[in-house]
Length: 454
Image 1 (spheres, rainbow, N blue to C red):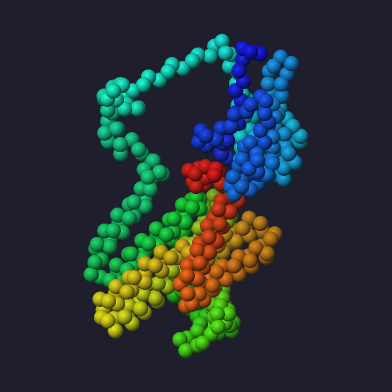
Image 2 (cartoon, rainbow, N blue to C red; image 1 turned 45 degrees about the horizontal axis):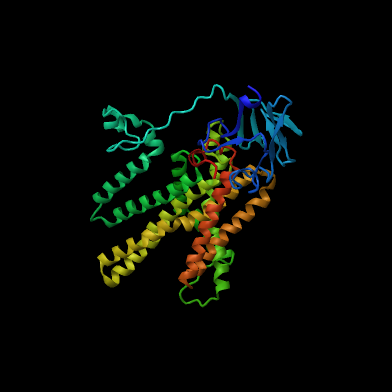
């Protein structure tokens, strides 16, 4: 099968870290007359996502065709002086090496992997595929010649199995039904109804962040962190925090009689709200980190913090506990009582519900954004322990500054408040995207498995 009687078919197939193939479109054909450069630069023939694969250089490696005198082709893999190296079957290459069918190419020690496949086809043995007949009148594309229907087609729930929980969001659907029934059951009991509504909105907001992070974390760990934050708010530790940040430090909250400039208000909010509340919400996260270090594997990885994604998941869970207790225990009762004294109990309860919904739903751009952003830095410090004293202060001050900016602009202009909220949300989303790219377990994370490379 040489010369004119042979056809070469070689390609690279992108696979995940555990060897599971991505979707079929991530298969790159190799041409005998053209080299294929792999990297993050848009000019490469095989372009990899810059956010997902930060370990890949802009021009990382090249696959070059090599012809022999008898017109047989082989291919070489060459490293282009990449920062993290190119590996062939687990061994770092220097210069170029010849590829053989089944060889596994890794861009970096833990980067994306390609499998090289090469086949020869003799044109004398190639059989043409019969043309697909056009659908006849009255038929539809894909219609079977047989009119029979299987039992599982009539009752699809029998054959879906585990896909219901993995792909059909069965658990969120069940919880939604449960919460709806509870909402009906608490009609006429405003306080209980408010707790149910707030809990469901908080669950929905957190589930959105959880799906974006794409890493599994036991639900009881997340609930424990949220409850831990709520318990801190009800403990004497809160009084100590208030004494330090609002008594000793310049974080006293302004009263209605104070006339402050924006700068003065921002400084007070930075100490009295930003630094104080972000440190308070970080305590359960740090406790999970320390507790995880005492456990054997795999419990230490499931409970503790080992990467930025862990920090974001626990940080946002802590923010959920903080927001629920602050909203249901402080803001809603106060405004309900004030309005009830002026306009009646019914009006007070309605206004309380109107306040509850935006406060809980807005936590994605509020408390969850600040705490999740700080959680990213906690996880990053674990990933890079030598730089911990550089990483943590930047994260703590950044989260506190966003928090203070939101509180300070709240009384000035609604448009500025929107801008700050969008900015906080963008900071959290950027941290999640970066954490997914840095994740040592990204090939096993469900966001990567479901979405694939961007």
